[in-house]
Length: 334
Image (cartoon, rainbow, N blue to C red; front, side, top):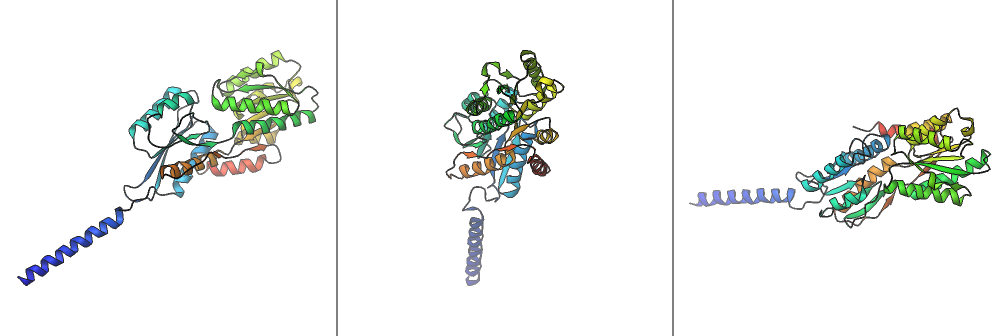
């Protein structure tokens, strides 16, 4: 009997020890610790993956995941910046699926996205373009108005140096009604006018953020202004480069200042080559990384603020350094 009681006591002790061991591995779970069943998941929905800018943002997101083993970052985006239905479906799928701890969304249509996220109880980070919703705990991206203003002021300076007496500017804009487009237009207008130029707002050409339509827009500008225009500013680099190419060979536009926005490697190369004058360079890699960092903090219940990832005006003196840095980031993409 004593032997039986001793065996029972030893078995009970082993069971208690086993239970304690199990409790020590899973009882005190911290979000993002990387423990089994404890991985923190972040959904990232871009405006598109079909451009260098968004690929660099993706690279930043993926680097954050590599640096933080307890976090899974799921990055996706529709075919183009006018693929509204595709992005809507992506957002619906991720929000309603309930498999994520936080959402990072770069909205194509901010008002529609605000309605889509209205019922979620998880934090939302607005990326690149803000979303007017109380579900959004932070905006991470470029201060578009401030950046465009910086670029416009520099463009006026360059136009005066090139010998333009009448410094007028026409914008080749992106998608009409898009919040980012509107912010950049506001910044361009303020910068041009405060630096002593004239922003011809009523002559704005909308080209849906694509190069082929920007060519058509530039051709229309040259027909309307055969005498030339001092500054052509565009909502992105693709349109600015396309406009500059369309104007090549037109003597009235030989001294025109072409100003882009994004700081893509092709645009920086165009600056080096002299076909593009300036570009307002965003920091998309940092944008992706910091958006993920902010989303994880919010998912853990920490307070977060808006994050302006900064702007750099690219001209010939710093274009090569920018190219080298962007190529380094692009090489990191899966």
